[in-house]
Amino acid sequence: MTTGGPDPLKDALDLQARIRGLQALLELQRWQIEVLNNRLYSSEPGGIAARRLLDLKRSEAVKGAFVVPKGVNDP
Image (cartoon, rainbow, N blue to C red; front, side, top):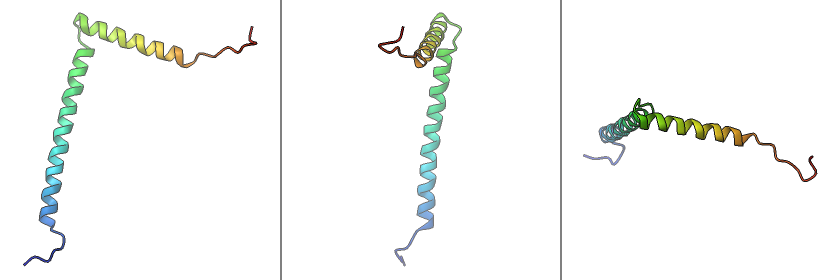
Protein backbone atom coordinates (compact mmCIF):
# COMPACT_ATOMS: atom_id res chain seq x y z
CA MET A 1 0.00 0.00 0.00
CA THR A 2 2.10 2.87 -1.29
CA THR A 3 0.58 6.27 -1.72
CA GLY A 4 3.48 7.82 -3.61
CA GLY A 5 3.85 10.52 -0.99
CA PRO A 6 6.89 11.44 1.06
CA ASP A 7 8.58 8.60 2.92
CA PRO A 8 9.83 9.90 6.28
CA LEU A 9 11.92 6.79 6.96
CA LYS A 10 13.70 7.04 3.59
CA ASP A 11 14.26 10.77 4.14
CA ALA A 12 15.70 10.11 7.61
CA LEU A 13 18.03 7.42 6.26
CA ASP A 14 19.19 9.73 3.45
CA LEU A 15 19.81 12.50 5.96
CA GLN A 16 21.73 10.13 8.21
CA ALA A 17 23.93 9.05 5.29
CA ARG A 18 24.63 12.68 4.38
CA ILE A 19 25.53 13.47 7.99
CA ARG A 20 27.95 10.53 8.07
CA GLY A 21 29.55 11.78 4.86
CA LEU A 22 29.90 15.31 6.21
CA GLN A 23 31.37 13.98 9.46
CA ALA A 24 33.93 12.00 7.47
CA LEU A 25 34.87 15.11 5.47
CA LEU A 26 35.15 17.15 8.66
CA GLU A 27 37.44 14.54 10.21
CA LEU A 28 39.60 14.56 7.07
CA GLN A 29 39.90 18.35 7.24
CA ARG A 30 40.80 18.19 10.93
CA TRP A 31 43.55 15.71 10.10
CA GLN A 32 44.83 17.91 7.26
CA ILE A 33 44.94 20.98 9.53
CA GLU A 34 46.76 18.98 12.20
CA VAL A 35 49.35 17.78 9.68
CA LEU A 36 49.87 21.32 8.34
CA ASN A 37 50.19 22.73 11.86
CA ASN A 38 52.71 20.05 12.78
CA ARG A 39 54.77 20.89 9.70
CA LEU A 40 54.53 24.65 10.13
CA TYR A 41 55.12 24.77 13.87
CA SER A 42 57.65 21.98 14.06
CA SER A 43 60.77 22.52 16.14
CA GLU A 44 62.80 20.79 13.43
CA PRO A 45 64.86 22.94 11.05
CA GLY A 46 62.40 22.43 8.19
CA GLY A 47 59.51 23.68 10.30
CA ILE A 48 61.47 26.70 11.45
CA ALA A 49 62.40 27.50 7.86
CA ALA A 50 58.76 27.14 6.77
CA ARG A 51 57.67 29.54 9.51
CA ARG A 52 60.31 32.09 8.49
CA LEU A 53 59.33 31.82 4.83
CA LEU A 54 55.67 32.33 5.68
CA ASP A 55 56.51 35.37 7.82
CA LEU A 56 58.64 36.78 5.00
CA LYS A 57 55.85 36.31 2.46
CA ARG A 58 53.34 37.95 4.78
CA SER A 59 55.59 40.94 5.43
CA GLU A 60 56.23 41.39 1.69
CA ALA A 61 52.50 41.26 1.01
CA VAL A 62 51.84 43.92 3.63
CA LYS A 63 54.60 46.18 2.31
CA GLY A 64 53.35 45.91 -1.27
CA ALA A 65 49.74 46.58 -0.32
CA PHE A 66 50.38 50.18 0.80
CA VAL A 67 52.78 51.47 -1.84
CA VAL A 68 51.73 54.87 -3.09
CA PRO A 69 52.36 55.17 -6.81
CA LYS A 70 54.32 58.17 -8.02
CA GLY A 71 52.88 60.31 -10.74
CA VAL A 72 54.83 61.57 -13.72
CA ASN A 73 55.08 65.10 -12.29
CA ASP A 74 55.86 64.10 -8.68
CA PRO A 75 59.28 65.23 -7.44
